[in-house]
Length: 449
Image (tube, rainbow, N blue to C red; front, side):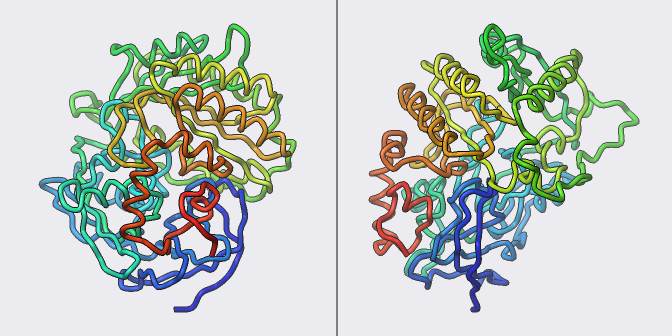
């Protein structure tokens, strides 16, 4: 099959690396015959997880068939290249929804398994891998193996959250959740500072099945960490007006046609936006109806929104800090960010539930903070190193699906089950065929292509 060498990046548009691309048209074209290969779905990981500098990148976007859907039991089997958007178009009209979803539906099913993605309901329902019934993996020797929590379970839990490094995820069988309609019941609760925001997230009377908090990253002093807790659940039939006509879908109506200039997102512009957003969204005192799209995927309505950060791209820094140290740790991170005067256009805080079974899975019981920061100069990376120290002091870790610059030493400190995972990796891929720029940067696998 023909290959093409060309520059490639993740969603953050940093780093940009030359990779050898191969795009099979069907499932039989998925193979592991290259000396160094990594599979890539929609390219929505932010850094270099789906890059392979001077090596092979296997594009799975056309391996996207829905193979079987049991509409009675809510069980879906599909090829790994299918997107969550394509799945939702089929299952929502039939009364089903994804058990876990990240903040965009334009990600592949295989990517959700490889990153063991989490959503607004992790503190209640766990991460994506907790709802996967089985996966078929193409191993380094070309064999195709079906594994599950009960069959070849070690390989299964090494692959869930394993960033594509154990093999090519070919098929996924997923258990869905029932819904009565496509609408959400949402309620906003404003907080004047971080202490109030944590109280809202911990309060069972304000928490809901899905909960996320927006934070004003520019606030400081007594207002540090002020934000809005956005809590919602799938609407029951009796909660809806009789004349409601709502599909829950919102098609992309805007697109960023060019790279914003470097000065567009600055402390002044983001400060003004945050003040207006806090006033508008915090003023919603009563529960309201929303389609699932605007609640789960607000940025999906803006095509190419990553261009807002300019040609040099941006870094999304996402970490989790355990419950016992979470408040002090998140406060320290926001103080570092505020003191740096480096704007974060997006700052999101979520509560996470128990540690999952994936050996390299990101979530743990605690709180996760995500920050989007444009790359202006090398000073950003100095700041991010400081944030790493705060996270490690609190016993936390950085999310590999978002990472573009973590050190190998920090990775080992953050992921204590790495050695356990590595034994399984060596057993199924002794020559390290499955390798990415991320894995080599972090020393997860040895050698270079």
